[in-house]
Image (cartoon, rainbow, N blue to C red; front, top):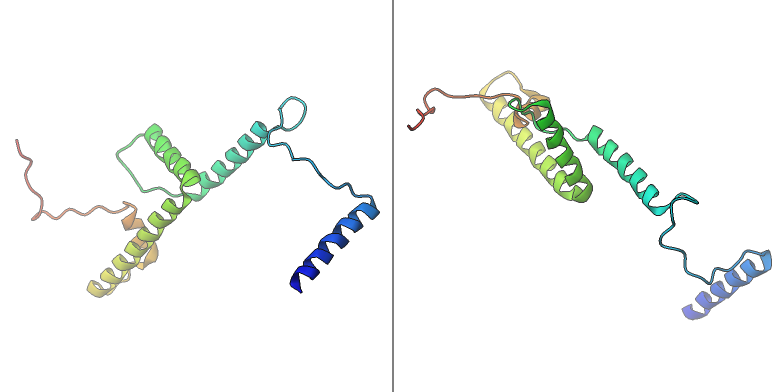
Length: 143
């Protein structure tokens, strides 16, 4: 009985398109369009890729690295943008892991000290904002 309803819907839809003058497409849509005469496939791809990359560039916040120059930071962020374009799940999992570490650090800080670090402080620590070195655990370099 269900097949009857589906067949009726298909016939009515096809008949209404024919009666209303809408052409019924029998051919296959082109998969590639050349660039000079119209907006082509390559131009459409690159405009979407650049827009997507610019959105990711503004949204992604890389770790703090004070030992690198401006070009090194630029290339580091560019690698993260390309990684986010190709493997967005990987970037999400890394961000989720850092968020969980920040929550654990905040909770540990609140247990030991009465002053609260806050989640922003935990994220800042996890991203490399604070560095702590204990003199007792520091070892002399081996010569």
